[in-house]
Amino acid sequence: MNRTAFFNQLTTQTFDVCIIGGGATGAGCALDAALRGLSVCLIEKEDFAAQTSSKSTKLIHGGVRYLEQAVKQLSPDQFRMVRKALHERRTLLQNAPHLTRSLPLLTPCRSWLEGMYYSIGLKIYDWMAGSRNIQPSRWLSKTQVLEHVPQLQTERLHSAVLYYDGQLDDARFALALIKSAAKEGAVVLNHTEALAFGYSKSGKVRKLEVKDTLNGHTYDIQAKVFVNATGPFSDQIRTMANAKSRPRIRVSRGSHIVLEKSHLPGNTAILVPKTDDGRVLFLIPWKDQVLVGTTDLEDELSDTPRPTLAEEKYLMSYVNRYLKTPITEADIRAGFTGQRPLIEAIFAKDTKSLVRDHEVEVDDKTKLISILGGKWTTYRLMASDTIDAVCEQLKVKKDCSTEQYRLAGGEAYTPDLFLKLQQTYGLTEEVSRHLARTYGTEAMDVLALTQENPDWKQPLAAPHPFIQAEVIFARRQEMACTPEDLLYRRLGLGLIDAEATQRVYPLVERLLQ
Image (cartoon, rainbow, N blue to C red; front, side, top):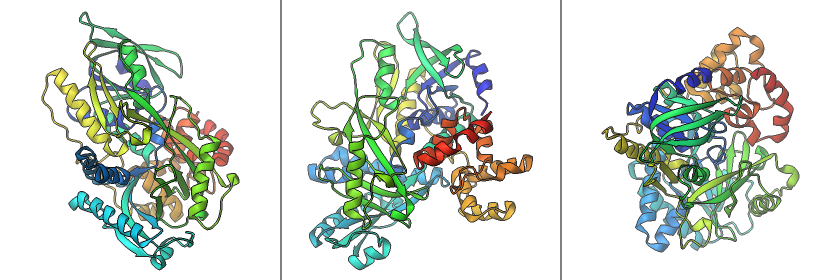
């Protein structure tokens, strides 16, 4: 992907659709539209997936909590949402096998009755997934539980239910969507901010003034249809297009902390089924660390959300309830906060009770299409619904074809790719596994750079498995423009190890030049 070449294309054509927002939904829209043969432009004011889409709990799931609500409320809408999400879970696992995996989760139970309750609930979860289920759930005895996770506190532990959901590298998945869209002909630009709309005589949005935030240059984008896919920032773009738009988004913050792997070795996650305030909480193996989250609190919109001390203490308290070895603030290696875009519901008392489904809104006056709400698991359905609305405005009939599409790096990926990398380039198993799981078949392109400069084979941030060639690849092929782009999205180091991120920053800055 060549950023300069993309800017040169901005003013030479009128696009069928211009998408504002480069997170999961915007990137999904760009790929969907490009595969339908539309001319596509996507802009993102920061980096691709810089906000919510890189700060999730890294799960692809139908929503165990939503299923519980569906059963309690006998809600057909909740049931439909869970079923659709379970279908999409399998699709995501197939579309990017290098960036996703099956994740075993243990739900600790305090009594026989609690074990029966969660066992029945998760069997319903299995049944709703049908033939697209990953693996069936099982009710485990206390002895079996401790074989899986010996770090669990044994006091009040009766049993646990083991079930399976999906896990994804969210920032890299969004980038794979962006790269795939570019491969299919889309113009994609990060660090490009929307400034102001221009209108036709009838009041329809027809033009968008944008600014390259890295150098201050401005450009006009002409398009037949504009899509607002900015997640929690949706109301800002809606108001920019039509000052009379009423707010539709309610923002909820979800904070996480990251601990050393020693606190929860192995590959099994823990689901805390119910906190004191009625939420669910996860302790998840992630990039050889442990990810703990998430909170769910109403919030004010922010470009730089961060975990509060109160949130850190809240998350620590549940780790200490469930794990034998207590943790303190000194054990927190990093933390991050994502803001969820929840569609405003008049009677919702708190953000955890809002349904995280989505809605495609078309402004009556400007015809701006806004995709509101949603979550990572259903990004593809959200994109499909959105581009259906685009095609309706364009008066063309073209169907979605993303369900069977292998994303960049996943086209010919096989689980034993790491062995080929290890043997061909003399890598350690840890480094070869990391490269295979991060880049898929493009790992060969990353390692080819070490022939150009053998120094690039050196570690970037030991003891983490990153190598210096990844910085060069990100600069040349993945539009990484700043150290933050590289450290927080292309590699994800900034989200798991604050100290290492600070230490390696000058080296990354130098390699990006």
